[in-house]
Image (cartoon, rainbow, N blue to C red; front, side):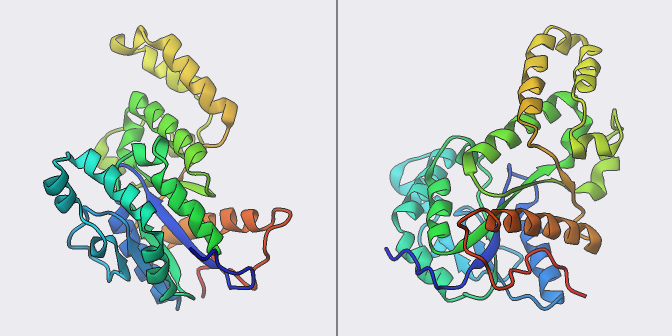
Length: 283
């Protein structure tokens, strides 16, 4: 496996992750169109072996290498075990991925990833794939999508915060957490606090107090208190709100990705790019 020479140009992109139904494929389609309108060349890479009928033109498709239905049938695995096998198979066939990606050098990459949460919190296959891509001079940001309807349930929101933190620590990429489907949030129900409280992840003790008003959660106050203390101790999790149909909203997510990648490049010893332009929306 060639590591990519130090002199080769950097490639930028986003690894789009998140639980099932969070809008990853819709986001990839929307971001591809958004960047295309401002003159950026975009290559969308489908890394979800269960993805069928993608709405976007697919530059690289893992189904050319392996598919989930084939794995489930031949190895008698369920969907979760099958997905893990597919990711391990991808990790074992990085030459295939490198060759496919090389055809789109000079493009901005969007990686549409599977929705199985444990792939980003516990399992190492995709993490190792991303680490290898860094050796090929890819500079990626993880865009972690979370459905905004979780904001309407304090207990679920604490769970989302824990999952987001665990993902950030495990994946080890510049990370942008995104509250997706903001155009639907009013349909989900009334929020206990204003939107800034959820995006900035402000004093979570108010969330614990709100949970304590529910008889079901009252007995778990100490547990919830300890969970939010861990989240606040790390002080890493915040969210960018996203309505994929809104141009300004897409620009803000793109800008957040660009800033996170630029900070990575500014570390001592990091290779300087000519002009990454990952956060600019153009005119």
